[in-house]
Structure formats: structure tokens, C-alpha cells
Image 1 (spheres, rainbow, N blue to C red):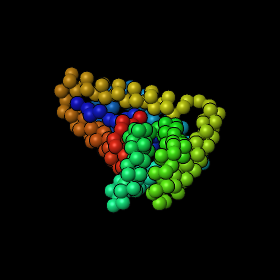
Image 2: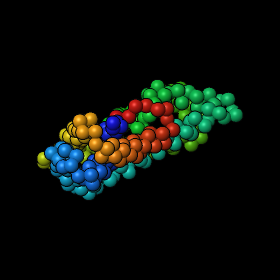
Image 3: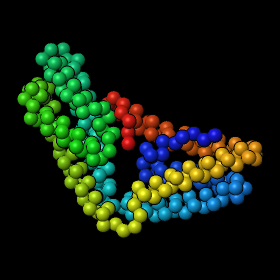
Image 4: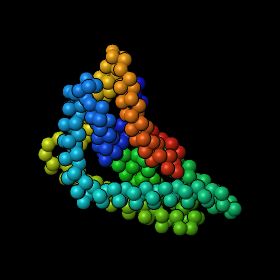
Amino acid sequence: MFLSPFIHKFRNNEFIQFIKNVLNVVQHRDPEKLNVKAAYDNLNRLSDQISALYKPELGSDITQELEELDERRDRAFNGIFKYVDAFTNHFEEEKSDAAAELYDAILLFGGGIARLNYQAETSTISSIINRFRSDTDLTTAVSKLSGLDEWLNELEEANQMFDKAYMMRVREEANKPGVKMAEIRKEMTGVFRSLLKHLEAHAIISGDELYDQVAKEINEVIENYNQLVVNRSSSASEPEEEVQ
């Protein structure tokens, strides 16, 4: 009856708005009439809690800095990947061979590096840079591609600055009292799924066409948010990899 949302891949702001959209559909059709008032009220209560929790998060200078630094290092990494890939087709064999060697070295770390979670991406980028700096063959290959060393310097600086800001954020989060975003998201996901199960059960029991209309509207919401995830994944240049 209901589509499966990529709910664990929604960013916090997407997750919050997604739940609000679903609640709006149910509220518009009257949760009491749909026999889901208890589940609706529970999810609505949690929605208010997570919205209040997200507001101070939005106000964090560190959070904003993290997003900007993550975007900066993603641009640098994607630029390097495209730059090296382009040189694999260079008309000078020496440069195309060097590019192919570097391209293969990057792929050894897997695909979708710019879409890894924060910690994994930081570690992977550090490992790539370290290998490019320490492996004699790769260092020679880098020197044959004009301008690539500047790209690597930019990536290294952005990654180091991100790691510093991330650790500051960890310390900031550790000092925050109360419920954490991940915890309330987990609870809300369970309540959301319970709400859908109740709707499905009452639809089967009653046979009321009202439930079909509710399902159609909620599925439309799910499709729209799933498409955000799909668009975000397909926009990266690296080979596809499962995201967290």
C-alpha cells in the first residue's frame, strides 16, 4: 500500500519536513476518522521535539562551517578525480600513463568517496593524500600532471580543517544535555512506520476508499523525498556506492 522511503538517507532538515508533510496529509483527512489518532498524536509530539532540537543545531557556527568545509573538500576531490580521468586520454603517452596509475590508485579506496559519512571520508582522503605523497611512483606520476599538486594541497588543507572543525563539533555535542538528534530520529522512524501499518490495517478492515486517497498522497510525498536522495547520489562523478 505504501512505498518504502529512503528515510535513513534523508538529511535532518529533509527528515523533519518529510514527517511534517506526512502529518499534514493525515491531519487533512482527520486522524480520528482514520482511526490513527494515537499514532498521529505521538508522531506529532515527536515532530515538535525534533524541530525544537534542530533549531539550535542550525544556529551552530560549527555546523555551518562543517557543511562549508565538507563541500570544499568534496569539490577538491571531485576536481582531482575528473582532472586525472581527463588526463588518461592525453595525447602524450607519458601523461596518460601517469594519469591511469593515479586513477587506479584512487579506485583502490573504493567508489563514492565524496558521499561517505564524515569520519570515513576524512580517513579515506587522508590515506589517499598520504599515499600520493609517500609512494615514489605515485609522486612521480603527480609531477607529470601539471597543476595536480595544487589540487592535492587544496584537498589536504580542506580535509585537515574539516577534521579540526568536526572534533570541535563533537566536543560541543558532548556538552549538550538531553535527547540527541539520532535518538529522536530513530524513535520517530518507528512511530512513522507504526502509523503506516495502522493505516494499512484499517484500510483492509474497512475497505473505505478514504484510505486509498491517503495512501496516494503519502506515496506522492515519499516519491518526492526519495527523488532528492536519488538526485544527490547521481550527481557525483565517482562510481556508485551505497551511502550510509
